[in-house]
Image (cartoon, rainbow, N blue to C red):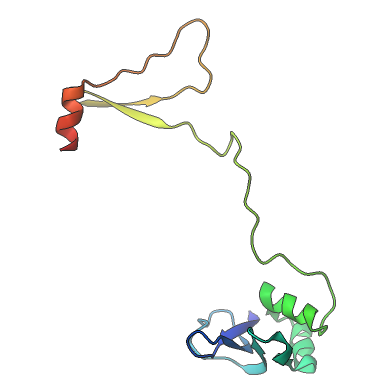
Length: 141
């Protein structure tokens, strides 16, 4: 699959990017690309130069632009559309995503996993066995 993406070519602390058409299997720092489609200076976005006719040609042929490049092309009005959020949203923590923690109890030589209950029943209280303090200090040190 062909991708239109940014390739960094600037110095240290001076980021300048080249807009390239490359195969998606090529690494970003490999330097291999099929065609140079423009350049982008992130410190001065007004200096960005894109070959609009070649970009629209390759997009028409099925090349995919990365989300950052897609948003840049919309800003420069090379293509029309709605911007895409490049950063994923954090998912809220729900009870289904949090699993019940498991604890191990050491009694002699047997390790038994114990599932912690989320809501204890009113009939029988849940008691968790606790190892003596002397055993805990020998295990830590």
